[in-house]
Image (cartoon, rainbow, N blue to C red; front, side, top):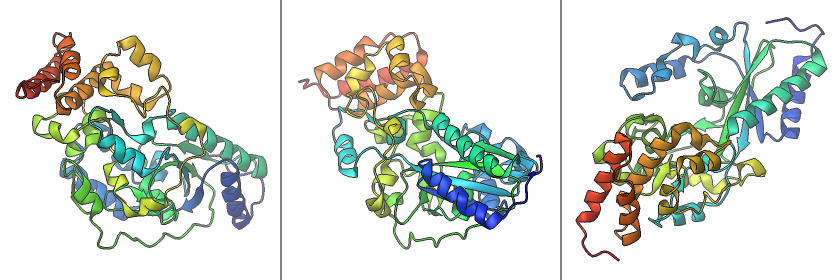
Amino acid sequence: MPEPTLPINTTVLAINIKQWGKELGFQHTGIADTDLPEAEGHLKNWLEAGFHGEMEYMQRHGSKRSHPEKLVPGTVRVISVRLDYLPEDRAAMRGQLESPLDAYISRYALGRDYHKLMRGRLQKLSSRIEAKIGPFGYRVFSDSAPVLEKALAAKAGLGWIGKHSNLLHREAGSWFFLGEIYTDLALPVDSPVKESCGTCTACLDGCPTRAIVAPYRVDARRCIAYLTIELHGSIPEELRPALGNRIYGCDDCQIVCPWNRFAHQTVEADFLPRHGLATAQLVELFEWDEDTFLHKTEGSAIRRIGYERWLRNLAVALGNAPTGREVVAALTARESHPSELVREHVLWALERHKKNKNLD
């Protein structure tokens, strides 16, 4: 990394960085060092338990994930930022989950893909710093590299890691994205905040598939977000009924968390629902052809799973829906789909409905 060309008062610069972050729309900006021994141990144990499932990328890159200075040589500090994305209140989400013919999509994915937006703003923040002090070493990230972003954000005082493994803030809950700037600037660091989950087990009790196997310990192989997004093959049959009408991700552990009473709805237009996805019904989405899927998910995180897994997820949700002529007709229309993966899940769904002969 190149060395800064101007004398720097790092204390003043840190204050400026936080102000500039606020001006750019970040709700919180903090600074951490790169020492992550506890997080490194937790990751090692999690991987050894096999809880990462098919997410092989979690064990790549050796120790670069827990040693920022190995990923970006010269890094001594991490500037961590928070950007709220909640598009609606919890009552609306609960209402949709309780409507079995509705399609539930994790709220982070209803609007524009956050990766580009976050990285763009982090680059703007970096440019503000550069304009102030001259060239310096940095690299920006937002869920885009082997980065322990929650552990770094916790060190930077943005919150604490809750029992569901999400970052929590006393005044903002957990409905937010995180981003980082790795830098060679020796800025003063912020203090971590006190962990405040107490004896609460709402997230463990509320997980539909019991993926939170212990406080702060999630078996991704059981997690609905993993099953509907990361898993490429067949969803285990024993877990399919627990998916309910969730077709992309799952928000249950956040919905039930008491701290999310204080979460703020987003002011970002890009994070608001598009193409009616917040109110879409399962049959409607299952009838999309591939061109419609690609059009409706353009610029969305949903597109990453592809059309085949989109239909797979919807077939499971339709198998969990109340038996009715419209549901059965939609599934029957896909019974001979070219994809073996889709056919398998469609046939499973139809078998469930055959047990109920009283069609509407």
